[in-house]
Length: 109
Image (cartoon, rainbow, N blue to C red):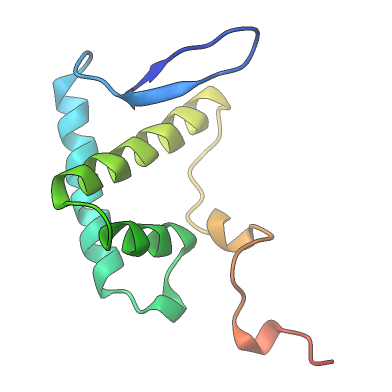
């Protein structure tokens, strides 16, 4: 899990540390590898915002660092879900106000 440096009610999450559960870190990296593979084969017009982020990151980072960056993002998402006691919602990113909409939903002026 990411290191945590919190003060005054503000939570600051850091990098994935070498401390903690090594099996959990292994699972996070394996999940990151799976997300990377899926993001690479998904067309840009059908990609989720996270897949677009992964595609852009893959252009400028070496493979190992990219996997750790994706695993860190997943760890932060998991931490937020556990901290706020929320269930996983696969469609949440599509409901976000900044999410790209299909051309058929755009208003024609």
